[in-house]
Image (tube, rainbow, N blue to C red; front, side):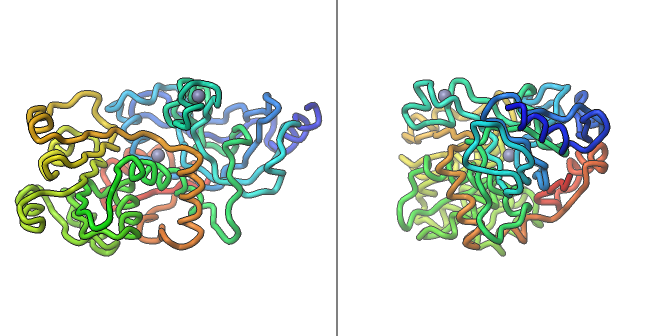
Length: 359
Ligand SMILES: [Zn+2]
Ligand SMILES: [Zn+2]
């Protein structure tokens, strides 16, 4: 244990064991600060030099205070990959020098949900960059349990590995969606989660995939990724368009990846009677929807959140195999130093699909 601590201290090669971190200090305020570098404390802790971390929509919603799911002061950032620098005495699955993708949800493994194989519902979960005590990846260094670190497949870049988490979130949602061969699927929202979901959907044997978004630029990307029909609700009636391609019935499954009332309602509207509506979007705490439409049309509304190790491993596999290409999605790179203005800029930059910070 002492040896591991020494290594950690030595390799944090800044005076006094400090590091540069982007700290969310107040609503709409990000500051580049020199903060104490994290230390190994538990025997299974690993110190990681962060090399790439994606900016998640949930971080932007936390930054504006809209979602209430980030409480300042804290370091956000949960879509990360990096290099192992030091390990605690109980760590056997990774060693210094290894390149790892970071699964940001720390499960307890003991609660009833973990034991039922539903780790994303763990009663004691701690999410990197979400729970202030867990630390975050908008920093040079982070400490995270070895069990949450996945060695990167050979040839994978840190940028690719940083897409492991959002892609795993999409895979998790699709496992809960219960999609059948030749289904028609409607995807509401073409942000990073929507487009990654689309990339996975295109690997399935579906009849067609509808994608709706208010941004024509995003819809163009969706078409390039294989959307069958795109819908801009500022011009088109989503239900009418989907009906026109489904013999008037609607989509078998719809997936909402925005998190607003209007888009949640749209997902309900375009779904066939008896169909499934999956909600991934997590933006507004409360929304208004047409409940009668859910009841009388016997829709199944399925919430979905985070992911588990199965999803994360498969996401890395899809990235490594080239089944999902991050090329069209990774549209901006930034440094930690650019952080203080980056978040405000991203709020007004719909052309940016995914921004990855390289600390
Ligand atoms: Zn995320
Ligand atoms: Zn648990």
